[in-house]
Length: 124
Image (tube, rainbow, N blue to C red; front, side, top):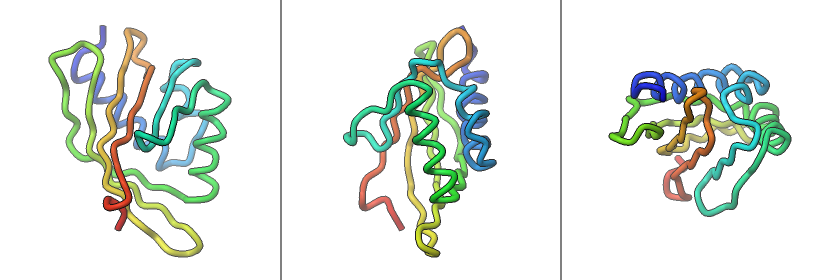
């Protein structure tokens, strides 16, 4: 089981890889059957093929930058929460989204699930 610190490092690496625009490096952090819901309530994105399309859209169309806050561990062996600010450019206008992302990380130090908690009032 990854330590709390190792789980936090995976979450921060996720932010770095999204910001770098390296979709394949982002996918390396996920199990092949991983599920994300970003934001929670919009439905799941499941598996590497769907995740590749999802992150390719973020990189190509929004030029997203993800700035992590201080990761938070848990007494569970699998979870870490990370407050983040995502800056995205749409049609020449940059917006920021405040989110809290929760990652479930397995023994292989890979993400099995991710939930992003943000809503319309969190966009600036």
